[in-house]
Length: 162
Image (cartoon, rainbow, N blue to C red; front, top):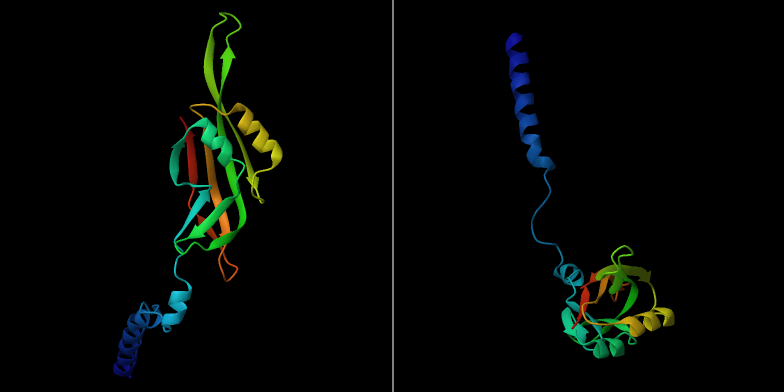
């Protein structure tokens, strides 16, 4: 009787040790090649006029671009609908030390999330009136919809003013 229990116990231990292989996920190729192609990552770029990626422009060029709509476009020139984006405007101003009377440059950031493009009129006015060398316009967290209605992140756009 003792032999039967030890044999059953050994069999049970072997089955439990092998059960890890039964629970593992299948790491093979997708069953359907069409499904894999459907979920293929989009290759897109974010555009503001002709500006894309990281670019340096003059203040006059940037003033013209800021009034244009932000677009997300693929390599076939197909535009995608924007969901939202954020803009951070790094502005540079002058501060005066009240005790010494000396002035020094100081920067701050104005930022907001937008769901429409082009930018609202108040933002366009504030940027165009104060834009000068050393400032930056940074479009980030750009979210668009693909053809199936799924959201995706588009590349960031950074404009530095020369």
